[in-house]
Length: 451
Length: 89
Image (cartoon, rainbow over all chains, first blue to last red; front, side, top):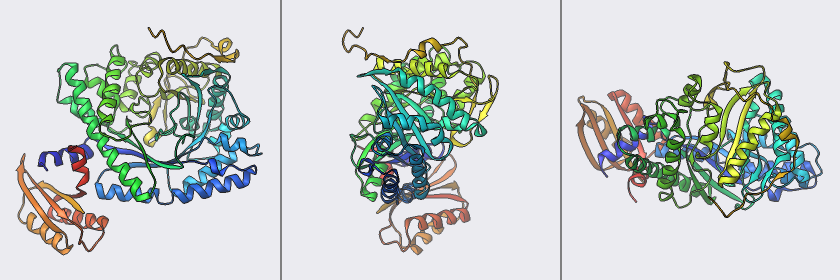
């Protein structure tokens, strides 16, 4: 092996912050259903703690041996609405609390799957789960919740959209001592994927195996550094460069995923090759866009730059790995990306541009702080817009906004750690209440006549 | 199990001696060595066989890092697969 290649790998890890963002164990809870809420919860706790007992330890030993940081070890479970529905339990939040306990016992930092899929309609379990989201997120620490309100095949459930606007508001209110932090653990999806290892939107789909290992890789810093070497070159060169580097990053994910799956005796699921930024210097997706020649993320050209990046990451990664899945692309969370925070603070990036960017990035409006007095209907309308982009364009979109209680435009919220800090962004002051009050379903888009 | 050792730092007397003595103490076999001065920095790589090592990987890693601190260089040890999987098909 060549010295330069060894040094390149070491530099990517040390200086450019290449890491395995998460090893997520997906666990099916379908066999834990029980008409008694109490025994269902006992089965859930037992199954999770049994299967994930060695997850954290295994992650740490792989990290030591291969010298690549594995930032998070996490668990995703079957959408819990199915278990709430099967039980006679009225109190959905009790299920969230047992998930929290299991997460603490196994040492994972998040557990996802306090979820409901209501793109076409509600079951009794979905209803109970959604109603309990504010309580669940206020009384737990590590539980993440997601609700899928639309899909390309079934359209958008506007009743759910209306309700989720209210739930986001209530969750913020219930966690107001922590600046609405509960909302950072709540995602409203359209076209949610069933094998996403990234939080807060991870859940273990019903079509998945009993237990699988999914891996999420990251490395915006590595891409940025690679582009620094091709300054002024044509886009053909830019795309090629990103593809090559995405290939290398994904190989790490494949290696770690296989190693983890072998050691844990659990099948390997997928690698999600997403560029997931952190607030750390040199770990920003916005800075990649700026490296392409934009003065600031958010200016004209940003959407095109992001489209190129998102697509090239997928193309490079797909060949590097036996199974690619999850969200795969580039994330654009505002609070978690130093470059995005700067762009918002300078006034170069606003919500309208972010919405356009979500049409070509891998998810949607992510980790955006908005004024605490934003009406629930306005949040619902933001969800509806995002869902429409996803449903019509056949992609996953999502909304994770935080209406920060007591804060308004000009304030900044510190969430700390990887969640970062968010300048409160202005939303439109014109009401969407009449639109959201209608309810019903927006029909699925036509799948022909695509011009 | 094969591993790759990298030693990077300011050149000084006794780096190779110190590192190889430590590896001998740990019962780690050296399969290949390459050493150069890159941009003024002492840069050495070794391919190691750690199959017969007396300690586990975590302990070896820590002892080598301590040795590095003593010699004023940075010593890392990583399983070989991380490099081979990244750079070859």
